Length: 224
Image (tube, rainbow, N blue to C red; front, side, top):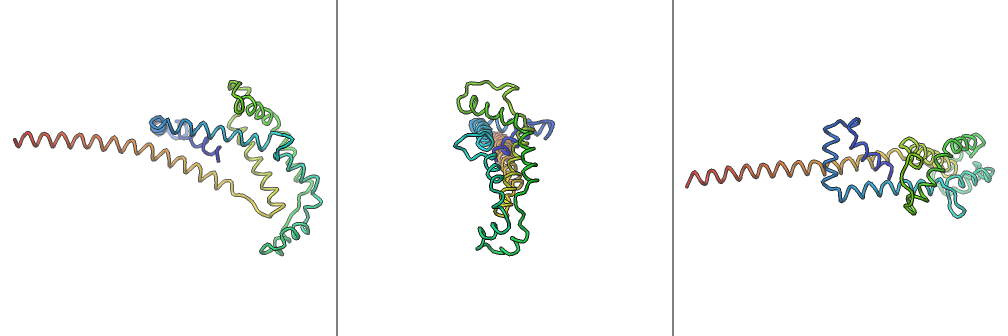
């Protein structure tokens, strides 16, 4: 969700995406309420990378993503249709779900491990960002410590895929992350729209009142 907030704010300020006039109008609205939007954007970025660090960076006391995968690998013999049926025995439609159930197999593990190997450099960079910029703020942002938009998406997509795979294998359920992302982006865009056009409407009303006031005074002077 934090990534969707950051993504929406960046999109709304990008002239190559929304057009120059639209970007200028959006940025003007954000600057008008910068006391709200500046910390809002900063906190969304902070939450994004701290959450990703909790998911991906290993720690002996943490339930990070790779530990879940390792646990599933070590216990995959217990992730059978029969185990699923016993664990979910009171669930509605358990007969149909048991027939459709697919356990955690070797191909799943090979696929996931290949994905983790691919993003290992990103995880190392994420650990540096957490330790030196977010937790202690003693490291300046550079190209070596910054994580690109594309790399952030890789982390998010991997976490989504693995968590949904584990949930599907164990609970026969999945989370609709795309729907959450669309709603968050829509909410941010709606907020900017309100801030922007409230400003423009107030300006138009002020100008109209000024004109009406001038006309009223002119008519009074003429009548006297």
